[in-house]
Image 1 (cartoon, rainbow, N blue to C red):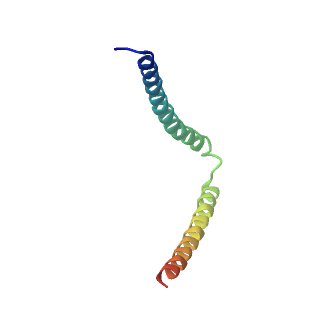
Image 2: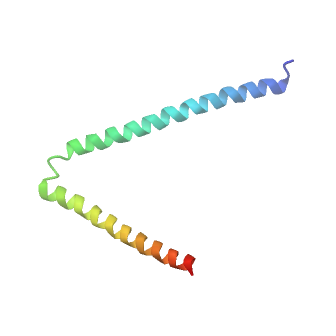
Image 3: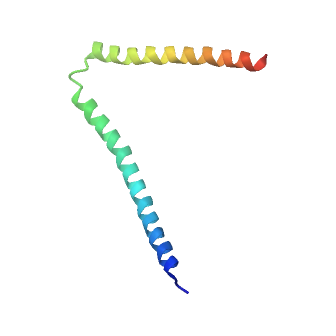
Length: 85
């Protein structure tokens, strides 16, 4: 027996299916689109990034990441000391 609530349920199911499809399409588009954008920017910046500039560009984030790693290790050791005693 089909009632008014059955039609509402079927309509919600169709809307949910559309939502799922749109989610996956947009997720894929953003994932692939971001990678294409990065590849395009890297290709266009080859003349800008000389060996010295590229080295400096890679060293600065590397140093920052190293500092964060040391701070996280120190913070983790402090937390372990607080838990142990």
